[in-house]
Amino acid sequence: MSVTAHAEDALVLRQDEAGVATLTLNRPKQYNALSQAMLGALQTALDTVGVDPAIRVVVIAGAGAAFCAGHDLKEMRSQTDPVFHRALFAQCGQVMLTINRLPQPVIARIHGIATAAGCQLVAACDLAVASENARFATSGINVGLFCATPGVALSRNLGRKPALELLLTGEFIDAPTAAQQGLINRVVPLEQLDAAIEQLTDSICAKSALAIRMGKELFYRQLSMSLEDAYACASEVMACNMNSEDAREGIDAFITKRKPVWKGC
Image (cartoon, rainbow, N blue to C red; front, side):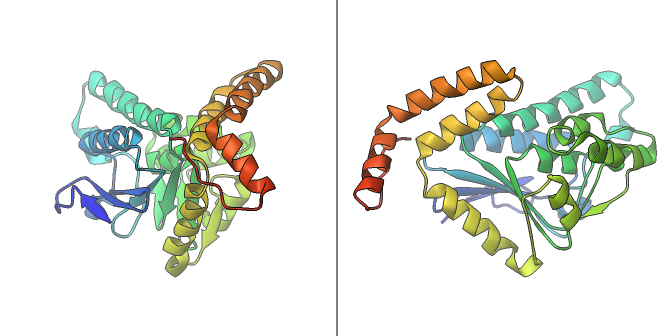
């Protein structure tokens, strides 16, 4: 196990173990609010793990009592220049896009609250596991600010009506409801949260890194295509995957009833 950026004042902590990089948002007293500096630190951490061939899965977690309380409202209110606000929201959007474009799957580990841009962060991750005490809201509307950018991620995870209900009311939903609506994958007791994350990361790490990378990239790319174009694109990717060394190894291992030895990266 290796740990980097471990100083108490580091805004994002990174811990590597067995091919899994855990990035922990580290502003516990502010419920890990996404200040401009925090977003910058998270962007840097994501860019770094994205090019690290030793990392197979990325987990995003929060220090302290919560996952993430969204944008730092005090910082936002202290700035009156619209140029700052445009840059801040663009910066946040870039972080979310980076998560989608990362070659590794990204899993959100949620406990406590995930509100506004924190809820957006959950929705932007490829997978999400939450403890039973987790709660989710896009609460900007309660202070006169419609959560427009979180709505982009929510509308691509939830059905239209559940997404709009969250955005229009600002009310909290609990973890079972979030799972039912498609925002998260699994709900477990808090004391089992790390074990559930480990089970999921172990399952992914056991697969071909090449196939995972190709599959994730294709999954997001085809979402904006017509059905006909999506099938054409997917067929090409699958044909390329089929002709990879890992696919040949995997099929041979299946036929001969042995464990595959992946070589792709």
